[in-house]
Image (cartoon, rainbow, N blue to C red; front, top):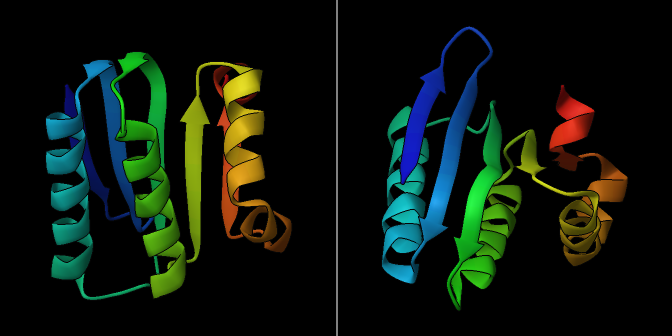
Amino acid sequence: MYLLNWNETQTRIEGSLGGRITFAEAKVFVDDLTALHQKLQTNDLTVRIDRSRVSKLDDGVEDLLSKLTLGFLKTGVNKVTTITKTDAEATHLINLNLQATLEGSNEVLALAQVA
């Protein structure tokens, strides 16, 4: 299950994932999120992906979501923030995009850090 939202006040695309995420569902999420970004015709925005309610990611989903983050960073969006359930998951995602994290364009937070 996923939700997408355009927060015009904060110029932020918000995507939330929850429950078990199959590869097919993740592909639709990525396609819809990418289409929303293209429709807005601007990179002067931030993207927030909330994964904190995910119970299970099927094979290939982690790679697909990582490519989504990298794609946003390559197109020049101001920042991609990912919210995870655990510190261990946050650490893993930080290590995947360490350079972008050090530069400040990638941010990963565990749910406890957001509250």
